[in-house]
Image 1 (tube, helix red, strand yellow):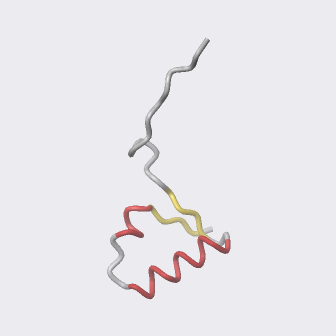
Image 2 (cartoon, rainbow, N blue to C red):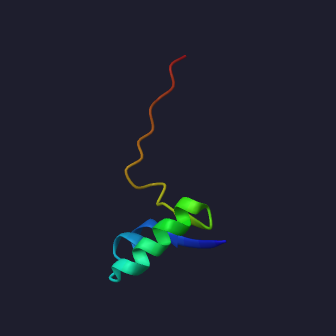
Image 3 (cartoon, one colour):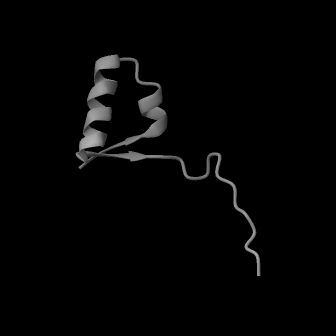
Length: 47
């Protein structure tokens, strides 16, 4: 399975290649790797 990072996909200069990657991701042929720490907030658990 192919893998691509979200940042690379967002800054891909070739629009055709970006469409191909997005199609592979949608079909399950490729995996999108996101930056887990970016924008993720933790909430305290209530007891």
